[in-house]
Length: 294
Image (cartoon, rainbow, N blue to C red):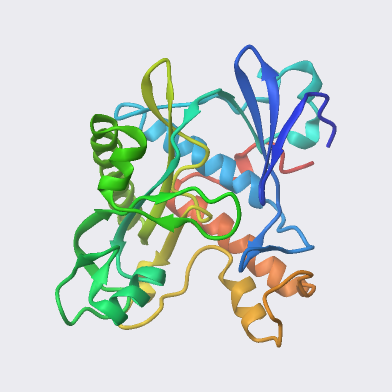
């Protein structure tokens, strides 16, 4: 892929470029990480799935909160980024002043929250009812912010800590919007056979207005469970990198770089999971998304 724009940053999945006029170009790759290690092999179509799903949700939530998205159309990009191989995996966005917190919402107790509950009976420091099982629904969705770590895992913070970072009024607005986005998204997904157990939003300010940015309710930023296989007391299978994690867990690998090679069948199964999640939630055919022939 040829991109003749100033490069700003590369993360585990996304590459960011300066598109001029206070705009950024976000390119979502097919890279995949597990246990904080980026695998050597890409997952076909993963970047396009994440872009397509985010675009769907940005549009779906437009009446609730604005977004940074300008266009996903290759023709709208600067001339230095109109490589056909980028089709379907790019977002031209407005540059936002990103908030220094991760806006996490949990609707079910799983992952690190479940481990905390087993030890202390709390989640994010908040006392929960006794007798919850792994993957039990919470009495109501909970906003559990964290700080953005430059390296390693993010650190959980309290709402009061978030207030100290961004101010009370903005923190209350962020909490309100995060919970509403989760509830609306989870309701739609549940109608289509997928439980969204928890998710992470990125938010920022553009001209003083709160916007949602980066990606929204994707298999990378959320935990998706098939409703027909959900059972409290178990760790349900997920529509994301589960085949990769399961395979790596079967190996004698210390979870440090370099990663072991992924078999073709694991790569294919993971790609299929991402595509199925997109099609089930949006009701759209992934084959109609741009760039699949490149």
